[in-house]
Image (tube, rainbow, N blue to C red):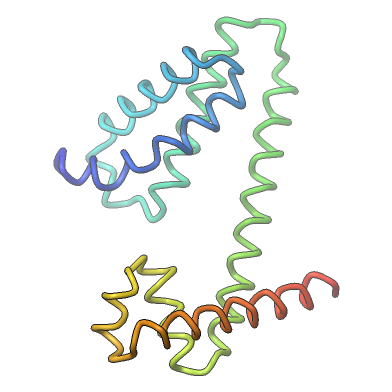
Length: 164
């Protein structure tokens, strides 16, 4: 893999990596250093990129490990148990987030074909309305109406699911 792929894949994750690092080290300068260390490790592992199915998850794991290593070295008062609890809590949040996403994907799969297509183009493929207009042949106003109604349906279905 090359530098361009690295830039497209990992640099957009900077804000998320910084938030994770800051939450763990609780210091702006240290968090920035941890993100830079994470990027160094990601670059060093560039031969493994083809095996990475989820670059975001892989990056978050690396930033957590970099931060925990830093904390062990600089703050010996943090017990290993505390670090493990941080990791488990974060893993639980990721699992919950994945469950929510899977439920939303199931709801979207049950939508009428046109709604499904517009939602996937907008949110999965991150296309602008004019690009959706070109791909579907729908007018921009129709796209906005479809997205609005579909978001409402997804929200209602999701709330029903949560109440169960």
